[in-house]
Length: 310
Image (tube, rainbow, N blue to C red; front, side, top):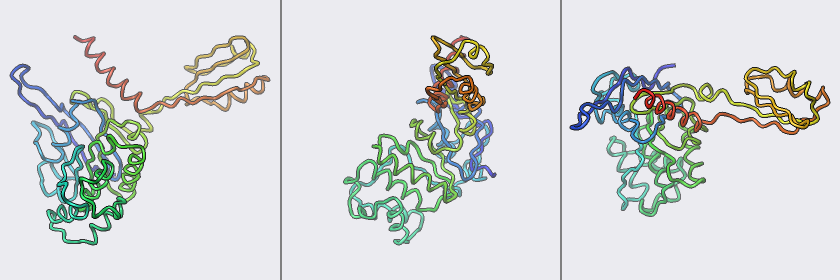
């Protein structure tokens, strides 16, 4: 599959009076494949916004290479087929929803009122087309922003905190729209702190900290390694001693067995053996690794390693 975004040692440096040169983005190697939803994660000040600005050619890298849809960073022609929705977009609040779309369409040389109406339908704002932006809720403003971002029929969308500060219903509406974009063959690059949302919709993620990529890959692979807890009753000490499962924790107290085992091990075989030994399975609790766990562990490990080196 072709890369929608690819960077090679992409670096952005600034000079300061106190610390000298600082690499805000440091030798960034990033690959985003066409047609996927990609999550770009990191704490505040990690370099996410600087990276996006370089990919959009708003600022230029100090060194390294970057390509967006096969075109080198700085090639302004790519703006015809990409879109960007910032975290806090500014709208002309006196305009109505349909007027806003007509205005931004005109910047692309598009004079297609039917397209503007269709986009309002797509984001479920057709009934509110005559309301001014000042009358829109935050969720409605996010949806009109997504409609605006689709005016030029982009192949690649950059979305900065698309669900930030929204209520649960608005969350769901925006999430469904983003999933639609992938279904239409578009690539979606999301920068967000809403880790649970990212986990639900993204195919791959990268975690950046202090300008460097610390983890990158498919979510299914990054979140592998969950565990399962099994509780059973009426189990003998001899049976507990016979359990030989790699990396499992086994304990037995007054006939109550607790087994904490990797999810990759054969759960059904253990359950069958408990029942064969006349034991009673009380509960089976899967503890899937979450993106939040991966994120926190990654950032903490970096901080701990740096602290150990100082």
